[in-house]
Image 1: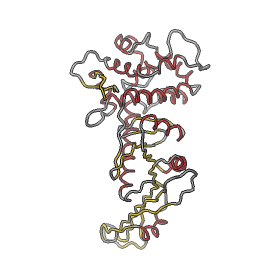
Image 2: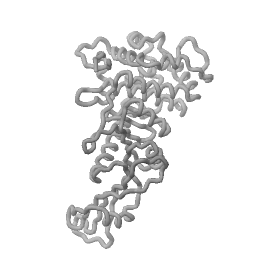
Image 3: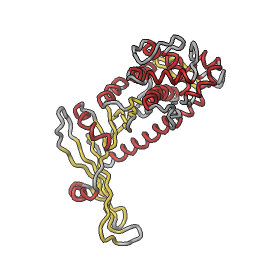
Image 4: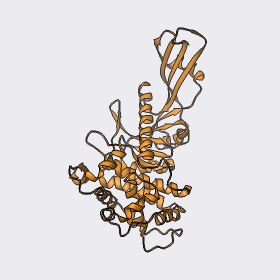
Length: 367
């Protein structure tokens, strides 16, 4: 099987040479042809600019770290931008915005973009690497609404999709087993669906620390950090009532009881801090906060790259639906750049890939 590999070169042919990489990767999917064949009644016929050229122009703009429609104007006279992206014409800002306004009135384009974003990763043979827990490997799915990311690489799976849709998307890219990591506000509604599909998860719960003291003393292992400060780690099996559930779930807790503050003052009323998780992993309790901490760190970093490196800190339009469509194009560009930036040791940050794109070449390698 041939996979695609992108490498650095010392030769810089043109500032827009990187658009050749972008076009080649887009051409591995059916994005342009599917958008050209889209039957949306909301788009008026415009023979001057195909839907495919509109899409490639905007993805090219995003791969330069720009998302404002007005920023396409200087590229209209850039022959290399048009040539490397194989565009018949580069749209004006007004044409680009108007076409996205029209397309945003239906869901068709958004679904096509998400489908073809996954198709790109499959066709390119994008690596999806696992996390390892006690010698067992899991493909992480990190949910930070509205985003869902997969693998240690952090490819974007979906944007505001139903759990079942995100599950199917993950299964298109990797065989699993999967480990979903979520926050309480996302996990409560997803937990039953994951249990029904026999998918492992770690969810941090929102809880009152004081209500866990009795459980911590009964089931936890206590260690003393200093005089007057005890830390309890432990887990409690939770009966599962979800239909189709095939594995037990556990409450995992870390509770800190402070009776003397760090200055030596005895507290009249003890202070309690608690981190409580629910998980299907049968693993030492101490491992669960670490896994969840990795989730928080990954999501913070990936969201920052998406919003800042692709220019989405400020939305491109005053139209909410158009902004949602633009974000879907952002997912496509993000995954393309994330793949292009995969190094032998670690992945490049999106902004670094954007900067180095003109110095990259693409190769097919046997796997």
